[in-house]
Length: 403
Ligand code: ZN
Ligand code: ZN
Image (cartoon, rainbow, N blue to C red; front, side, top):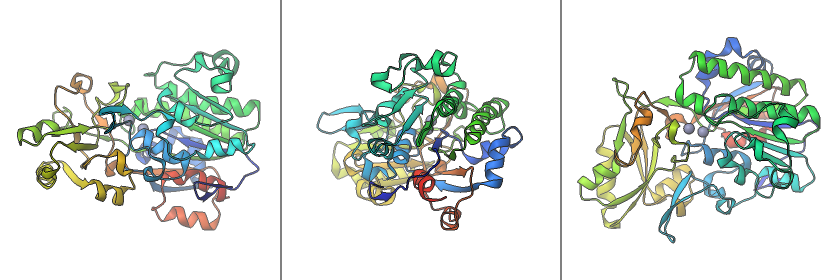
């Protein structure tokens, strides 16, 4: 069937899309000895590198993956944006910001059995939009009801254990495990399992904590594989260290700096979310709204002169280059280099939370992520994947047409 102008053929096996939040390939490479199932997928199935959407943040990429289209079409380009009519910073976690249906909802409305498990509840409402099936978060697994989530008694009935806390690395494992437990109980046509990147923000590839976490993820990927599913694993974005040589966070506080140049702006950092412990709202991407539009060129030139600021685009340029929705990105879009993050003012951020080091994402430098399938792609899709030009939001297109 056609969804958002792309074709999604029904498969006779369960199709499972997995988004491993913040997991770039070096994490798997460093954990290869403790991820036998994923290694088998890579060897006997298929793997290639794909590109995330910009900004390389969680919500825009998750929503791109489940709609199969970029932000310019689906409307989701961050956790926050500046609503010019309301004149306030609004959180883009409500389905009303979604401009198109999801593959998941369309399949479910077409009689397919669909289940979605997300680690964080912040994504749940958009993922569940018009979905006639199961959708719950590990975060609030205890509150799931048949009416709201299509399932109840998740902790005792399905999982046989309580959910971990939101800052417990195992919240993401719980999410993949829930997918396997659901599939053990009954058939599903399509599933989407999406984790959180707490571990990746805290630990580098190869750190014992990262490997331990990934070994547990691997166990449940293996269980899903045993159940005969076609599995595709990708990521919403990668992750990098953003620190000075002394270990302190490397930040350009652009709102403060522009103020000092007499350029008045409102800087929006769409990585901001209620779970700021991870990253102090510091990432590689920001947008800004100028008080005086006449200062556009001046602001652009000044920002580009700052060390670590790599790309500054006008609204029209950003729409063209990154397929972003013009109404939600302000006057300038700013991206930093691999090691730098973009801040507003030092006071605005809770820098204490990241004083021991900062790992984050948002720019083009966190854009390349793996896409791994447990089965061999047909020739047409194998050669597409091999180009390195496919997108993470092609995941369900590959799962539906590539075998
Ligand atoms: Zn993420
Ligand atoms: Zn993150």
